Image 1 (cartoon, one colour):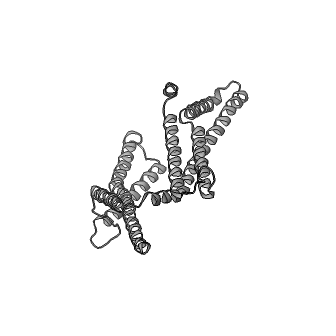
Image 2 (cartoon, helix red, strand yellow; image 1 turned 180 degrees about the horizontal axis):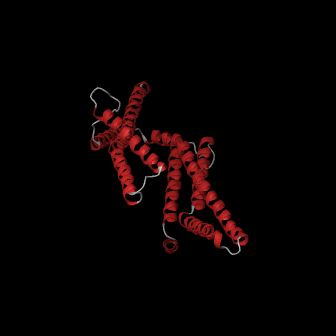
Image 3 (spheres, helix red, strand yellow; image 1 turned 60 degrees about the horizontal axis):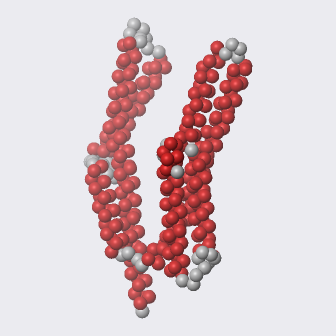
Length: 282
């Protein structure tokens, strides 16, 4: 009898929390859309005026006594025309009473942010009022881990690609400096190329030493592998999750994963510190 009563209650709790999360996600998307609408509405007149002012300034200071080149007239004319058309279209969508193109037209951003804050507060209060028992939360935590592992691996691949791109660019630029220097004698015709290549090598070397994408990729991949290893051990019921109590295994699993995530955050903070600061901490 207790199970037949708890099932509807659990279903009601889940539906309520899902509804609140959907409301929060919808408000966040509306805020993003409204921010783009406001930027477009008030940014396009500025672009139009800037294009016209630059066009007139070039005419006055460079071609006062002659005709402006056709390419210049075409470029600035096209920019001014399309930005003006975009402003008119956005103004109609914003202020027209007949058209309903924009969902939150004439709505200040602060009002949407207030609605989002209230929705998040309602979600917190509802979650606190309908908090499930620890074992259910731990089981739900386990089910969310595949997304966390995928996120860590995605970030690891991102930093690995950045590292490889920087290394290949460094290799090519370093080799090109020697090749250009050997090709031109004297090197005067290639002075600009040598300066650009040397600048590229210096910037990449400094950026690689400061951001350290290789270390970030390694730490993220290591954390993802460790979490996946513990998740597999829990799923298979092997050490250290081979006790007879499921509650104890879930609690130990959640504690271990949170320790791994805290260690990952600490590694990221250490990488963000200057090299001298890291040596002092060590």
